[in-house]
Image (cartoon, one colour):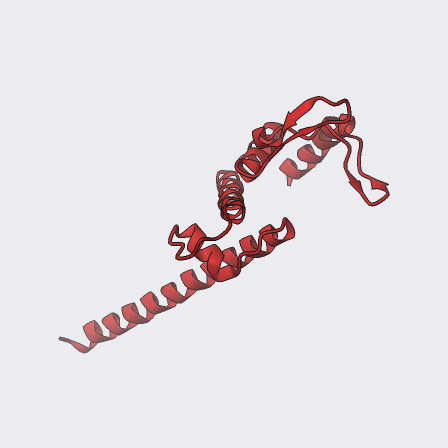
Length: 157
């Protein structure tokens, strides 16, 4: 084998190792993002457990609620990446689709401010007021009229 062929094979091997390291690093970042985002919602899974759930290789009996939360969040994250990669504009319908994906298994049937039944698994925009302590966020009846200009600005950038 000539020297230039040997050098090429060594360079190719180095490239493969660098690529493997980059893939592992991006997987770790993704799993860390999912771990911390679902922890805010109450999941108790660690990053390594999140990796197992995503790879569908769970060795232990993790709580079904936590596994579903990781799976649903992952689906939502990939949907957002799909929208971005394909340069698709954000719309209320796409936000509702995203909401459906992340609430698919752990959503619940609740009641809105007028005692109407609301199934949060369907992804519809909330029709009830949201509070944080004594603070009330935007009134649910104004969500669409507030989102439309925000979506226009976001989609122009």
